Image 1 (cartoon, chains in turn red, blue):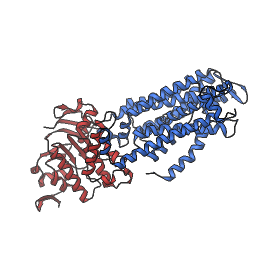
Image 2 (cartoon, helix red, strand yellow; image 1 turned 180 degrees about the vertical axis):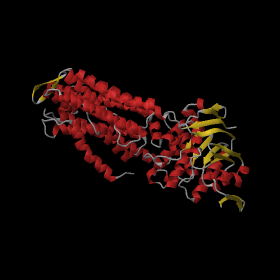
Image 3 (tube, chains in turn red, purple; image 1 turned 30 degrees about the vertical axis):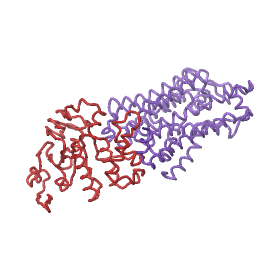
Image 4 (tube, one colour; image 1 turned 90 degrees about the vertical axis):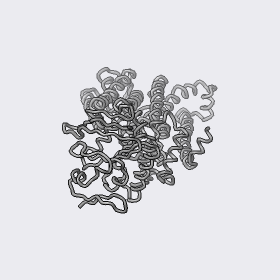
Length: 250
Length: 354
């Protein structure tokens, strides 16, 4: 067990956003969180890495309780890609190098540079490495942000809409890289994606949020027509096209 | 080890880093050259040869006094104050996520002016001997009050930030509001004061680097020096903050703490400098922005670069103010803006340079 979320509850005001959320995640698993806008998906991610503090419940990463870890200790274990990012005046290389921040004591080491180079290659960003972020397209920028989280060498990755701004080819490529990384390095990832077809294609586990709590949690079996219709409120058909599962809104 | 380390970095990246270091060194060299010119320039008729001889301890007594007691503290004050104000601006802009932020954002200048007004008007720390020159009778009283005034404004804003977790925008707004509150009180004080005292207060608010003694300079240098070290320790934190608050938290930055401490240190720099030499605006805005355009936003290099450019700009402004209609010395605060504004507009119009 790499992540154990045990009965967390969170609210911004008096209205609860998350109630009694509990699930576990193993190494090598990619989990997708699904639900309507405002269902509490992003809030859940932020609770997991302590950007928000849950009012109730505990979260364990391996043996450690998240609430007892310092920010920097969490950052060594959890990589987080926020839904919205700002771009300082950095080059692609420096922006990804920033992912090494939790590991840097005073100055960067050879290992940091090596990891940045590897990540640049993985995301096919080498040619852009000295471009300023302001000169990149939305898709390239999104890749840089994800690359930074990978350079962090986390054991759990939290990605809030990582395929935003990406074209069809890049959506598939980026999710492939995430999936491969999860398998190769035997880590875990939690993603929020709105595209149900991408979700079905790449996830091992699914967490459906409805009415601020878990509606269903499990593998492929929970992604049936009844559950999806109940969560999103529109009828769908789940079919297979050349052995790839697809969701078609009806 | 060192060799293999460099080999693993792409050559182009090394070039790019070297270019940044080159710009920093070049700016520092320019400052050094300008300092020698500045020691030389003025109404005393020193030659470069005299200056060098005096610096080496072999000059005439008359020159020794001019160089060591008048020109040197003034030039070093310009450099130290310029470094301090510029680097404080650089950090403030990052932690408040606001390109218009400067060390004076939290109402420091108005607080300092209020403090000085209290010292001069209520405690009689200033007077005048003839209509042309205003004397501050008790400079240390004014310095202390100015410092208390400026820090009180800062502390209120920081307390708001700490206890109510207000956003950076709210901190900026609170600073503006407090600044205007202090201005109002200063105005009321001046309204009921006699014209000599009012003149003293106004005179005090014009920045004047000639006010700083060696002792003042030492205090400023220590504060600026320690702050620089503190900022450099946090350079990765500021880089992370530039990528957005949530991303920074995800990267292990204790955002609230970094922001609060950073604001405190920046304000302290500005308060100390302002208390000794008066209000000198603009450096904290123009210095970091010029360097951000030239070398980018990486605080590993931006912090030292902002420092050196700040020293250069303030020294250049002061030297120009001293020499342009010599023997009349123009207030440096006015010259800074006069010189800085066109330069700044030029840099802005050229856009970002690769």
